[in-house]
Length: 318
Ligand code: HEM
Ligand SMILES: CC(C)=CCC/C(C)=C/CC/C(C)=C/COP(=O)(O)OP(=O)(O)O
Image (tube, rainbow, N blue to C red):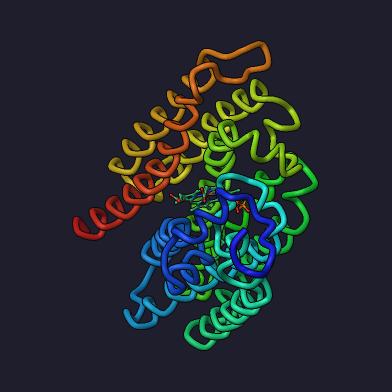
């Protein structure tokens, strides 16, 4: 061993830690930037769908606050999960387990950004938006991360609410009120989260098992998880059509929701039918689950694009 201090981390983790980016990139990585991009997009969509005209500077500040809050919650999640992140291959090279950023600084960073985002949202918009924003941080960092994640296989079904609030926050920031449309947008993201995450959990199952996290395939098995993914994609398709049924959206959105929903169901059926052993464990390298996970990301992005385009078209034709 080189140097004077003993380093108990596995060789692969030490190698990765030395290889990964700069200090600034590490601070950004703590915020889970790629997840934020989609979270912020759904928040901006909620803001855009709201009636009336919001001052563009206020709109930009509101979106920045959602971005900061989501990142802050991600940093607190990484602080709390540092003991399991070092065990799981997918997360072992994150800034804390990689030994590049101290845990206490990460916590201070997460708490600082949380306060900043909520106070800024409150000053720039209204109490309702700031209140839901604060509740979202609390729900993800405390309810999901510190409680549900380690205690029940339904962790992400309930915990998924945290990531579903941004459209409501965007709407509240623009109007100071709540309505059916943002609640339906919440429901869409809420029901999207299980097939999104369970697709990934099918091929990350060993990691979660080793870390002792009771994710659905670890506790109930891969076959049960496959059926659940299919069930949620079917419910998701039905709920995604609620805006059409309530005449809140037009034909463009309806067609988008139908095509994407059927595509997601097709992915889920492939996950269900993939070559597997008696326990439902894939014999095909979890190819179908990997496709389903990637499709889930495209699905949510494109569905919300459909909402925005439909809204813009309705406005343009009126
Ligand atoms: C409790 C709810 C959720 C759970 C448990 C969850 C879980 C995960 C996990 C474990 C990953 C892989 C991350 C990695 O490899 O580092 C992931 C990726 C991702 N998630 Fe989720 N997710 C949830 C909700 C959401 C929400 C609400 C959004 C956005 C609206 C979202 C957007 C994304 C994106 C964009 C990625 C890809 C990140 C990348 O490419 O690195 N997730 N999710
Ligand atoms: C406005 C606001 C506060 C929004 C919160 C949005 C948000 C961050 C949602 C959760 C997204 C996510 C990556 C969960 C995975 O956590 P995990 O701990 O299961 O995944 P990991 O194992 O990759 O850390």
